[in-house]
Each structure stands twice: as C-alpha cells, then as structure tokens.
Length: 117
Image 1 (spheres, rainbow, N blue to C red):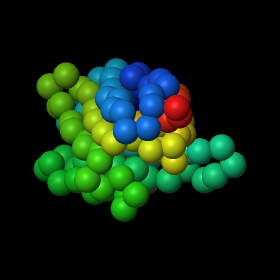
Image 2 (cartoon, rainbow, N blue to C red):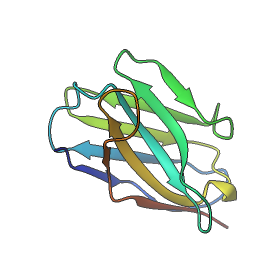
Image 3 (cartoon, rainbow, N blue to C red):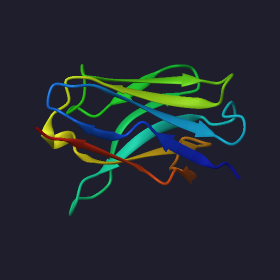
C-alpha cells in the first residue's frame, strides 16, 4: 500500500499561481504513472495531468500551457505547478498513483483549490 498526501491548495485570485505537492509514504519508482485529477462541485472527476516513469507528460486541453507536472523519485513526490489560474480551475485536486498504466491504484485525500476574486 502507498499513502498519498496532497498539500498546497488554497484560495488564489484569477491569474495567480499555486504549487500542489503530493507526498508518498514509500518509493514511487514502481509507479508507472503518477498524476492529478480534479473534481468540481456537481461534476465528474477528470484527469488534469499525468507523468510516466520515463518522464513523458500528458495534460488536459484546458490546462495545457498553464500547468506543469513533475516527479521526484528520490523524495517520493509529485508536484503540480499551476499558473494563470482561472475560476474554472476551482476544484478538489487529487493525486494518484498507477502501477501498470491501466487505472489509478492509489488516491490521496484531495486538496481544495479555489480561484476567486
């Protein structure tokens, strides 16, 4: 089992930035994919960004050019740098780990991001 703990969420004005962190309880080297989903009130949980073990990244179209995902296999952490935030980015953001690239195996508890003036 791997426990994932997110941090870094909060309230930010439109156009601002936040950096989310996801700390794993043990090594993430065996995780083929690490990434982030988000869920806004009344909506389904959608993939935001993911990073493969080799470093390849994928992003949802809505965040391309604004968000950057990174992975630190030494410190067992994943990060999501979010710039030029918009009100529609408001959601609970969840970190996940996927061992085989099929579907998420582990989830964090989520961190709230609110973009509002």
